[in-house]
Length: 132
Image 1 (tube, rainbow, N blue to C red):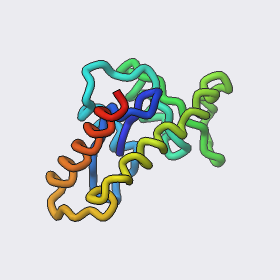
Image 2 (image 1 turned 30 degrees about the vertical axis):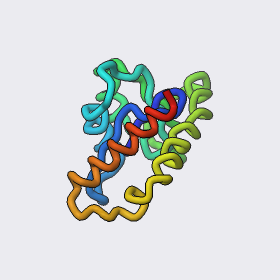
Image 3 (image 1 turned 90 degrees about the vertical axis):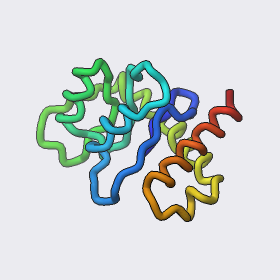
Image 4 (image 1 turned 45 degrees about the vertical axis):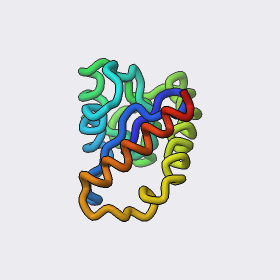
């Protein structure tokens, strides 16, 4: 899981086991961020449409922008104005494309999770050094 800023540079990166849902990983990933300041907005795909996650992030002063799932039963919380920012979600996908250039991250040679997290953070640091 990774969080990128508006230009696609990594702000935070975290790993977790496979069966956990992405909405459960958001708080852990925000806690492991590289910068001190929390982002004002997070943009995610339809998997992040969760009222619990919205309330949790709102208490921290973060606005969650995610389109609603098609079968949402509760009232809609997103309007069209905020969803215009959703078009910039490709910048996060570009961050993952940059990370896939590192062979150790693609094939995961590391057996221990700590070593893999270290390689992920090293890859983020290299991306930051190249882009800044």
